[in-house]
Image (tube, rainbow, N blue to C red; front, side):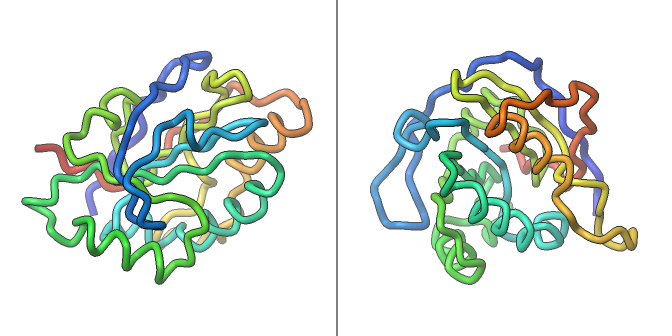
Length: 185
């Protein structure tokens, strides 16, 4: 497993818009504007085969289920090169979303422009935007990693989400996510 860290985009950055095909619900495509939440939006980059994603996916789905009903938009995106990594292809994305009970869209960034616009660099990579679509958190889910013995809690991401939902201060000292590097073309 190669460890790649988040690039840590500047806080306050506006969410880049996009139009990407959906692999969860069979809708042709969605934009950021279609999926943004009234109180904020979580955009995260994942893929089907990454062991870091496999390690956190159950907690990520729980976070999505806990917060989407509170007005948080949830958007998963895969940007990996599917020619070199066919296990991340669109058909398998649909299967992965079904197997993991996604109740949020899993979008396919085939030309990788969205990953570049968000400065995503690894899977998983989390970007939380407030109700004004400004970046308030980017970084890790929590301190758990495959094999390090620290249980999953989602504490870092949950703390930031609680900040936007309940008007609390979000700690600006944020740790980068660590995962597999996005597979660039």
